[in-house]
Image (cartoon, rainbow, N blue to C red; front, side):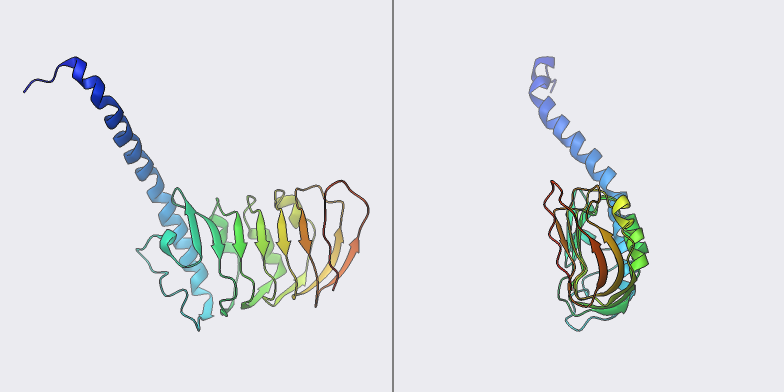
Length: 199
């Protein structure tokens, strides 16, 4: 049966949508593989997972269906493992390949992590919660030069030392420092709202 040229016009939107969806799927696959490898490398650093939240983190599975992971177009944008009672000595180097990561929440886990690892986090991070994780070491406020769009940070209940300047040039609106941290905080009036809690 011959299709008249005029009738092809009706099929054009369907053909276009199909073509775009195929191209997007092909483009997303490499990111899924890269993100999956990054999460599996992070998972290997966990020595004890008493609640089994990471049992679904397996090779060959999309990271986007893993516990604590949220994706956009096949890329990991949120990693939230809050209060999971995970144990391990961790490094943030594997997370450096998650180039769309905007939220990292690891609070309430028994991690041994040196503060220098913060320098490996992605520049696009907007929310960082590492309270009550046994993070230790000297905290350098130069981290805010790299994480320039950071809006929320919680480092409470850690073992950090260092000095912080309240006039940092960034978009942060919430900065929480309390309990077991020993910071020298220099504060002066500024236009942006900055919450600083000492501990």
